[in-house]
Image (tube, rainbow, N blue to C red):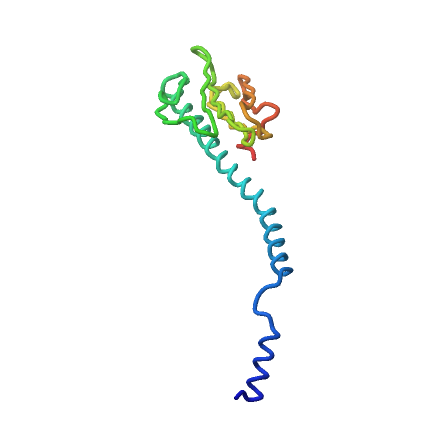
Length: 173
């Protein structure tokens, strides 16, 4: 036999719901969807930044290696193997070095983007004359907009090296 108190507890328990209503589930799904829509673009942007870090690192490495090679050999190297660097093309970037004929006062290093979502990079190591004194200068330029292909060559003059229009100098940023 149930006491009055026990029957009252059972009655209260049967009136309360122990699950979620459809409205509560929909609210949770909507809130989760909004948060995912906000977070996903930020996540994808970070992934592209990581891919671009590869190109920045390789172009910077090529610039520094060219400086050392040019000082030691009085000329620029036309491939990474000569510089003693193992840089291979990746799914994101294709790397290339361009040096003119003998006596060319600069070497250009390219990181060509293989997708329209990544920025292209270009670097230059050049022998310049500043106030009559020869020195070695480098520049690392990034395409302002993500596009597939190659960034514009830096602008060389006997006294300076600058990034071309459509690119920005990463050393100054």
